[in-house]
Amino acid sequence: MRCAHWPRVPLDLARKAREKSAATYIDRAVQCQLSAHGEGEHFGLLTDAGAYGTALWLRWHGADEAELVVLPDCPVAAPAPDGEGCCLFVDHANQHTWEDALEEVSCIS
Ligand SMILES: [Zn+2]
Ligand SMILES: [Zn+2]
Image (cartoon, rainbow, N blue to C red; front, top):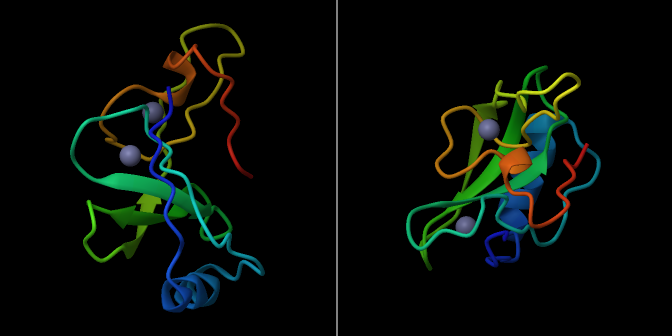
């Protein structure tokens, strides 16, 4: 199960995200990409249009201010030939996206 947090992206952060990443479009709302988790920080993928091997994430915690963070991609792929890559960032908590077999997960690209 994916985390159900799906906040709106503050307009000023969406603008900053476009400036940082050269992306032409930033979603107005992003869903937390982690598997359902009870506490801790949430991470929504804004764009992977930045430097190779990194992505721009929106990080938030409860009702606190959200912030932009640039994080390297998670390098861990599923242990199978042609194993799926993980859609998250390096050192994330919880499962890799490909471990979450209850639901089809596709990376935004
Ligand atoms: Zn979350
Ligand atoms: Zn991962």
